[in-house]
Length: 119
Image (cartoon, rainbow, N blue to C red; front, side, top):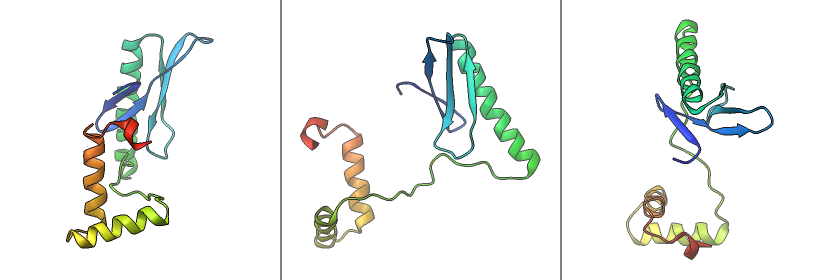
């Protein structure tokens, strides 16, 4: 995964500030703002793990469920024609629209489709 770190299911971005000479990042895909920084890769990784662990511990202490990065649902704006085509395909292949979209994503994300051919 390029420019990302993972710990306990949370993903952290990796950036570098040449002005400040530090690596920094934030926990991505949740609403809470959790940031971290380090002067080298090892200290950045350590700060990320510590930030996630602190967040999870704070949630436990407050009796609050921690935010999950991915809930398993998202809205996709496909346009009317693509929506129609996908819906007709689903019905004619005895599938739900969700099944069609999930199968298409699986194929695309597996690399079976050349990204240039989808542009």
